[in-house]
Amino acid sequence: MLEMARVLKASSSKPRKTIVFAAWSSGERGEGFSVANAMNAKHGFNLLTVETVIELSGVGAGSGAGIALGQGTSFSLVRLFQDASTRVGVPVTTRGRGPHFGMDTQSGFGGRSALSAYVSWDGAYQTAHTAADTVEAIDPDKHTTD
Figure 1: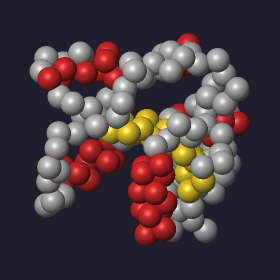
Figure 2 (figure 1 turned 90 degrees about the vertical axis):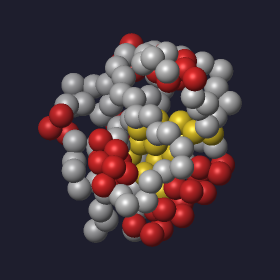
Figure 3 (figure 1 turned 120 degrees about the horizontal axis):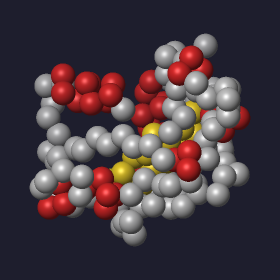
Figure 4 (figure 1 turned 180 degrees about the horizontal axis):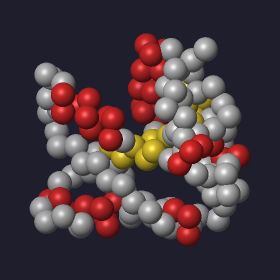
């Protein structure tokens, strides 16, 4: 997430719309991300219209070879990720399991109607929320292929 923010800031091409980056915790307790909570966290954010939400979870760890788009990802965003992944040489699947696979989690998305993508690294579910889910398990080279 921080790398995406850095690249956008350094780009000579400026976005036509406001981009809000939000990081949160509590996923370990089964609490999902709430757009309403995020947009109410800073004065004025609640005046913005949320059009797209991209949730990153388990992106830096996993045994797979590419990006996994979770159930509920909007079709147009699946196509966008597939096109982008082709350009950078990283495979993308819609058949992978997200890091919350098998967990009882609440969808805390606040009844949003925005396009949504649930992005993780394929295989991240194997160690997510276990004793092996540590900072040391993050692999900075997950963006490259063999």
